[in-house]
Image (cartoon, rainbow, N blue to C red; front, side):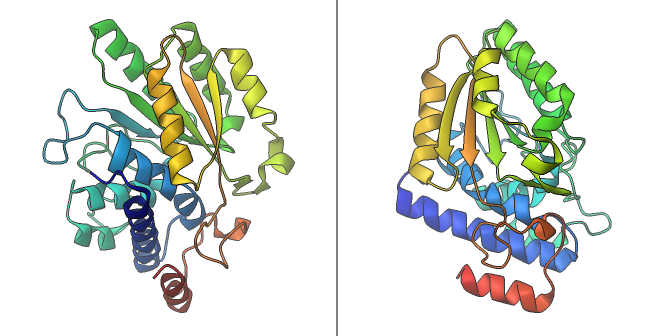
Length: 271
C-alpha cells in the first residue's frame, strides 16, 4: 500500500497515463470525467480501502460503486495498477469480447462490485449494500462515486434520503464536482446548487475538499470513517480533464477520444 503523498501523486499520474492510452487505443470513451476522478480513486485504492486483489470477493473487503459508470477507464486503471488484473489488459478497452466494456460489468471484471451505467442507479445499489452490511453486523465500508451532473437524477435523492433515514454511517458518497456534463456546464443545464446545504438538510455529514489534493481527500475519508451516526458526503471540487492542458475544463472532452497526436501530447504532459 502507498500511504505517503509523493507515492500517491506518482500513482495518480500513472493512472492518468493509462486512462489516456486506453481511450486513445479504443478511439472511444470518456476522458474528461475519468481524469477528474483519478485522484479520488488513487486515495481509495492505494491508501484507504480494505482490499485483497488476489481475492476480489473477500468477504471483509470494502465496496466501491462507480455510480458515474462512464468514468470506467479511471476504475479500470485503478484496479489494474492495484493488481486485480494485468495492466496490459487495459489496451482492450471497448474491444469486442473484452471484459473492459464502456461501463463496468461486475461479472466480467475482477474488483468491480456493481455493474453501472444508467446514472443514479449506482448510488441506489450502494445504499442497499450498506444497509445489508448493517443488518448483518459487518464492519465493511461502502464508497460510491457520483458526478455532479448525475445528481440531477431524482433516483439519487431517493437513495440519499434512504441512507440518511437508516443512518448508514458505513456509506461514504463522494461527488466528483467537475461542473461539466455532456450538454454543457451543470449550472446551465440544471443547477444542483447548493449541494452542500441540500445534503446537510438530508441528514448527511458533509465535507468539502479539493478533489485533486490527495492529503485533503485522505483526511476527509478518515473523518467519514469516524462518523458514528450519519452517512458522509464528500463534495470534491475537481477539474474535468485534469492533468491534460487542452482537456481541462473543456466540455467537448466529456466523451471524445484523443486522436494519436493528441494522445501523444497528453502523455508528454503526464510524463
